Length: 328
Image 1 (cartoon, rainbow, N blue to C red):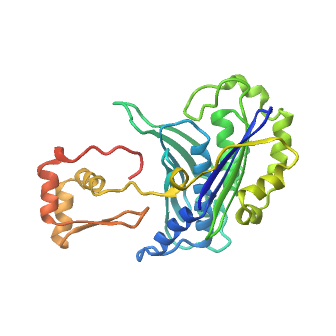
Image 2: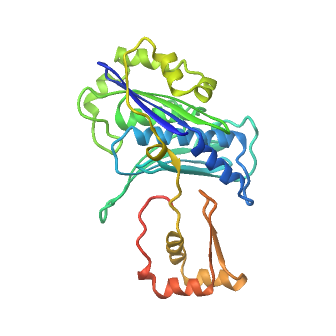
């Protein structure tokens, strides 16, 4: 069962989160594999999307925010877009768009950042957005301080977290066709809170890279190997890494309170999308075929609209319920 484990190092300004996605991750992969148009993800893209999914759950669990967290990477490689959405109740979904083929050993830059134009975006979309309110979004490149291409997605996110929160962060991520997992270790601000949602914490910049407790625990976390993260349970991982630390653990989040696959697509959302296309475009499709068919890239659900359905959409558009959310 997919689960989230939060913990603190008692008396120290350091916190951690461990995420293991099993059934939720396999549901995402099985739905993609059942897609007769696209088929299963190639192994390197599967592993990248799994790391992204684990990272998005880590980030959502680490902030106090009533809304969706959307993690995206996009660029100039064969992987045009990869996106993960995690709701505040940890319902999650993920998808990626691939043009062409990938070598089994393809790296992050070969997939998304061939010309060093790739970007990573994190969007926070409030659940009940007020009129005129825009989602908060932060964007970072897929290269380091000296424009060197980054080949580990964890390095991209560590760079982002340092920029957005001005807090030291250590991430270890791994994924295969069975498990997507991640460990996050973060230095807590000496006062106040971090600012993933856009506040200011520049007063804490003088602590960056200097806190000895964080540096020690970060070093321990960095010894975690990929196979250990994928195969060991949470208790084994935390004991193996921090057996000599005073770790205060909280009850794990799993089942109804934990991460699980959930898609927010609906017939109403698709109706709104057709309405935005316009009657002329929809009519041109219906002249060529019996209905308009729209498939959800996240869950594979197919929605069909015949001429009568389309006429109803454009005749009474105000009767469509409003649809919130960032990603359709």
